[in-house]
Length: 236
Length: 113
Image (tube, rainbow over all chains, first blue to last red; front, side):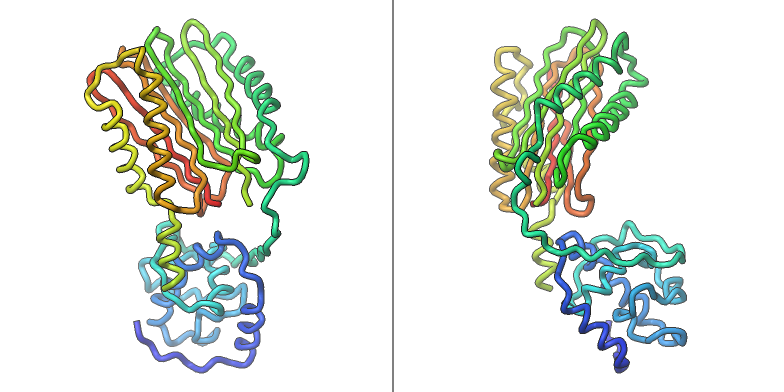
């Protein structure tokens, strides 16, 4: 879209310069910014009568976004979403129109905007000493959970999926409590009926073997079997 | 536009990975009947080949690939996963495949570096 850009006020320019000097932060912020940029421009370029706020919407001060313009655009980004706020910070650095990556999550509600989170580099590439993912500890915890939760349980086709979801959420929350900081967790649960069928589960990972690990726990009775695999992956 | 292209190259594209996994399983198991003495080799092969193909994509992800091979005899099976990760960058993908005697379920988790 080609709209004529009005001149910027001194206040906004100063704020943009200040934002441009800030550290870049994580990629998470960058990706989320791209999606919101194009939407903001598409929505606000049609509306030239925003009297309450500057007409250059992308450089608005934090905590401020025109509300009226959103009603005119079908694919509008959520002013309350933290994504837009981060876009405002990022736009001063790069003025590129990426594809709409995050648009499908948007909805407008008109609530006040949150302050954007400023993330700086920590320059940490390894976990602290003694803060590794302890597979043996996790294995004992998960095994104890399975033994207590599934004691006396029998397989039921209707509730099997619900059981597996509950178990995976439960195991993830418990392991999260004991897992060291900066670790991502992936918890998989397999619940099956015990009918003497042949079954094999195999897993392989492409990761940093010094810092990442996994734990496995299994429970079996006459009616069902349950397998839980928890992977702990260090996040730089 | 630099940023957009960079994000395309570094994004977890579910369709590509689904295709890779399906081809891998088709090549490894194909139309073979379930055999207890071959199942070890099948699962290892599916997982290793998938991981090799994923690493060749050259994207900045750590991958976790899990394969379940199950004999068809009427028994029920449910799988679920729960993840504590970065919602904007990390993705997972599950591929279900079957032939006359075998079910195969492959889950791929991609965790951004």
